[in-house]
Amino acid sequence: MRAISGLDCGKQGEHMAHSKKHTVIVGAKRTPVLKARGKWHNVSAIDLGAAVIGRLLKGKVPEPDQVIMGTFANPREWLNPAKAACATAGFEHLNAFTVNTVCNSGLVAAIIGDAFIKAGAEDCVMAGGMENLLSLSDKEILSLLRDPQTGEMTWHAGDWCARTYGISRKDQDDLAVESYKRARTAYRRFAFGEEIVPFRGQGVDEEPFWKVNEEMIRGAELVEGCETITALNASKNAGGAAAVMMTNQKTCGKYGLEPLAYIVSCSSVALGGDWKKFTIAPPFAILEAIGKAKLYMEDIDFFFINTAFGSVTIHASRELGMPLEKINPNGDAVSIGHPIGASGAKLLVEAVWALKKLNKRHAVISLCNAPGEAAAMVIKNAMF
Image (cartoon, rainbow, N blue to C red; front, side, top):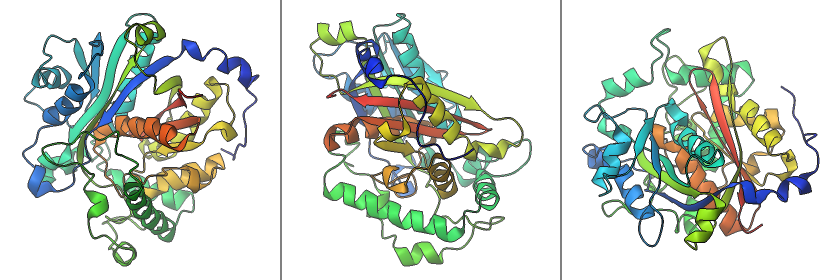
């Protein structure tokens, strides 16, 4: 793939005139991303999901026709974790179903919700994700992160991407150092104040406040079998939940809801061959989503790309010809954490509020997922 500065997509103004056809995001909330295993090991993903569902349903809002929640670890004590989260929040009468597309689960839930509304099948949908990897044993986590066909771990894919595309350990360490700096700066300017729902007394993400510094990042040992990946320049196992409330234009007006953002377009791509290609899939999904939106690369103010590994984000930046300054302005999964099934929804919630707070117009959210896939979504600030 070559770097692309723009797409020949026709008249942008004509597209913007039809923004009233877009799905409206009227609520966007998430829990803090949890990292302290000793503190949160006995917390269920259901409880995290319920915290977000309950918060989004406070006040004069319509009850959703469907609740769609993504999760990867999929708590085995529940047949339908999304329904269990609704019941735990006090809304057991709601229709709900669960999505599992690994890292993309939370974003795919929102993509499905958008499709329901655009098709006229539903007027209001809540969609998001929930996960708590901290509740799993090391053996269970290793089992989740190992490809059953090859026996390789996900970090071997991140390392393959780095070695194949000339991304050094230093490149990834540099990104990790910058990631922690951005996350801590974001807290100093209260970037997350309106999006976080406190969970059991925890009101902030835990990882940015740990004493991780540049010396520790650059001195970390390599993960076994890797030439560039360490535990400190890759994403952190975590817990969390996030969701958005979305409606059609009629329902938004009927209830007097404030539009936060519009969903402009969505895409998903699949690459054949080596399963490790999921690490290079996001640029394909991003370009497809921007093309569907009839926008240019230059029209996108921020890219929220899940940093499962630093190599994934650096590769996407280079392939898109997009400076890292426009990617993950508030930190990423290295400095905040990667609650797998919730990460896509967490990035979507973050993107909604970043556009609003920084008075920007468009953002792209994208995540890769094994084997060999990625999804993307373009959203627009409702103020424009």
